[in-house]
Amino acid sequence: MATQLQTLDPPPGDSAPSTLPADSSSEDERQKPPRKVHGVAWFLVVCSVLSSTFLFGLDTTIVAVVQPTIVTEFDALQDLPWLFTAFMLGAAATNLFWGQVYSNFNTKWTYIGCICLFEVGSAISGVAPNMSAMIVGRAVCGAGGAGMYTGVMTFLSVLTADQERSLYLGIPGLTWGIATVLGPIIGGAFTESSVGWRFAFYFNLFVGALFAPITIFLIPSRSPHSGATLAQRTGRLDWAGLVLMTGIFVALLMAISFGGLTYLWNSGQIIALFAVAGVLVIIYWTQQTFCLGTARGVRTIPFEFLRNTPLMIIFFNETFASTAGFIPVSFVPLFFQFVRGDSALHSGVRLLPLVCLLVAMILLAGYVASKTGKTTPIFFFGGALVLAGGALMYTVDANASDAQVYAYTAILGTGAGVYFNVPFSAAQACTDPDLIPVAVGFISFAQLASPAMSIAIANAVFLSQSTQNIASLLPGADETLVHGIISGVEKSYVDSLDPPTRDALIGIIVGAMRNAYVLVIAAGALTLILSPVLLFFRKTQRAPPTTQVLF
Image (cartoon, rainbow, N blue to C red; front, side, top):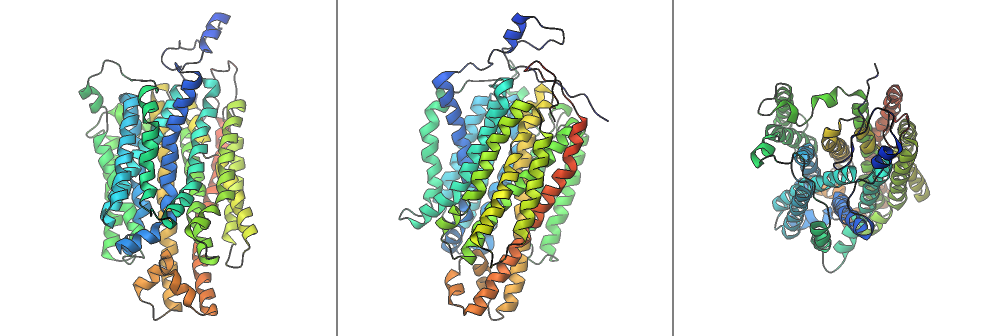
């Protein structure tokens, strides 16, 4: 049954929209730009907030090619999965909480606080004397980065006019996409240079310092719930929900990351982790349902979201697009390192066809959505390309040509990019105006949590299958050597093998990589199944003052 979706209210300072026929003066008033910053100052503000998105995207993929060097230096191959997982854990576990914080505290100073948290995590990662400190630094980076990203989307949501909002909300995706492709390149360049891999994290400190004056002095301040005391604002945060959400992610990601690699899947440790995750899910659901330790209006996940059918479809579509975008970013460089013997820098460059098209389509899709007001065709088209690209990548073997891989990843990148950022503007159109920051956090949660889980699953299957098959191929190799071969640490050993054995080894690894694209295929198929449901929901838009079908 179709529900009537609510209209967006104007940002503070604008008059509320009238449901009666409007005269020309009121119409002019409604169409005045809501932001107070214009011209060069506005350009600098946008560049400043986008710099944090750039750093967040950079840190998402920068360890993809430097991890062999890090695990070798710290002699901690068993902790290899946590270089990526810790970052995504910090981001995903805190993302919804940041949406609440932005809804209750001064947007500008919350954003600056998140930047400081991110920079502290970068500093810890850069000076880390061991793997434990590195994991802590990566987790802090992820938490701060998620807060920065939510802040950017919140700023661009509340400071832009209705007519320009979709276009502006596409720019962070473009910036993030550029950063994700530069992450492996910059990480590889630092690793192969005289300064070393630690400068891959120190780089964040330099960029943050460069834009600090603009962030502090030019970004407009916006404080929701004016007049509320600190205790009242703090009381509107779901602290219990944050703790439980973090516990769920920690238990799940530990189980998935260590299962089949550090411990057997049927070991007591892995079974206990899954059991803990399940118990925490039940406790979290109970806490949210009965508002234990929180109030009904300030739960981490407002239950009205779960009853909002179009919003939930948009949420799931974001998880599918993010999964389709992140999995090849993780596995394509690995393919070229094993099959072509690429260096860290060169394997990062191989991602250009994928990411260039992904970011171009993010920007183009934002423009199309802002002009047409329709997103269902965008979701459907993107899902079809993701399904096709994932199916083609599943056919890739060690004999595939470079042109084949480039073409297939280009299709996949185009599909994921088409609907990677559109859910942000679509979600706001079917959300109560007071909950827009929370809705932004909700969609950001999908964008961050889905790759954390999907890549953890893909890596677990890849490592488990590779380990088992390599041990059969090389019966004399111990567990440390097998893990070193898979992670790229033992490249010299692989090169020393006789050609038939080396070819068989590469075939095993490439064959295990293909399983990751099963998740991509499923993401594209589910997008095609769910998206047409949005056609049953309509919304009357406020600007331009005409009725359009949003979905």
